[in-house]
Amino acid sequence: MAKYVFDSNIFINLQRRQPIDIFPSLWNRIGNLMDDGTIISSQEVYDEIMIGGDDLEKWAKARKGCFLPSSVPVQQEVRTILLSHRGLIEGGSKKNSADPFVVALAKQEQCKVVTEEVRTRNAKSPKIPDVCDAYQIECIDFIGFAREEKFAF
Image (cartoon, rainbow, N blue to C red; front, side, top):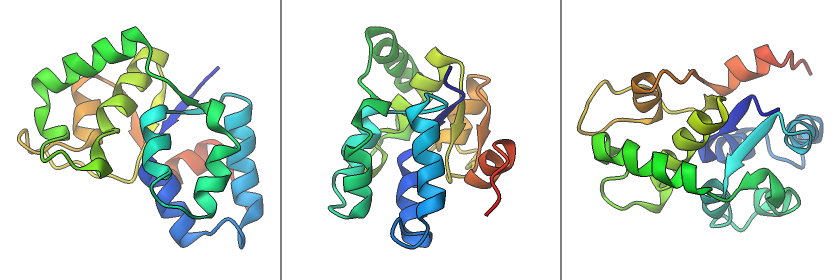
């Protein structure tokens, strides 16, 4: 059963700070948690990762099935989220277009969101943690996730 929905910035920032070729045990651990369904993410996150054209793209392609296509209930939830939190995607930037899907998937699957975004407490330009707060979805950063999953390297 899924416990976490990862935002794209988790994958992207980890690849920048702990590259796959240098930290294979970290990436294997995350991959195993994805393979067993503990970690899931959205197709939209996958699409953002595919823009990079690097080792992360290859790593994600090997786990494409862990990036879930948006079901009708998730799409409906995205619409609801955007009615009250339009600023989550304002500007049409590709880099944040997955955000409402991350929140909607977490709500549908009753999971925690894992993101590096921080609360703005600004209704006009909310971030994922702000929207999670509005929907009573727990939101943690990667370190919080790693502690919960008892990562130690």
